[in-house]
Image (cartoon, rainbow, N blue to C red; front, side, top):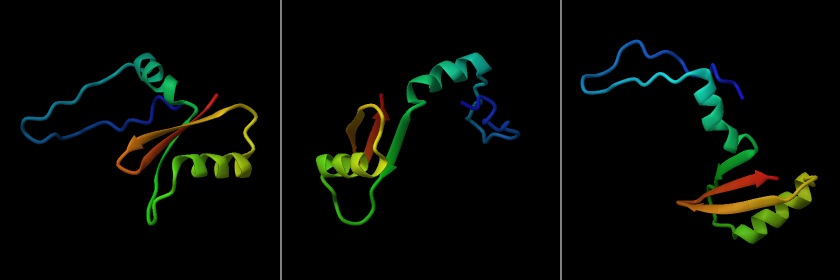
Length: 80
C-alpha cells in the first residue's frame, strides 16, 4: 500500500491538469484493491472456471478466490 508511488508531474501539455491527492485519499482509494490481481490473457482463450480451478490448485489459497470477468480478456482475482 505504497501511497508515495505517484511521481510528480513537472510539465503538462496544454489543456491537461494535474490533481494532487493526499496520502490518506490514496490509501482509501487503493484499499478495496489491496488483495486484487488483474490479469490479461494473451494467446488462446481460456474459460473463466477453468482458469479459476487451475489457479486454486496451483496457489492453494487459504480463503476463497473470487474470479470476475472484466471483459476485453481481462480477469480480476480477489482473495477473501
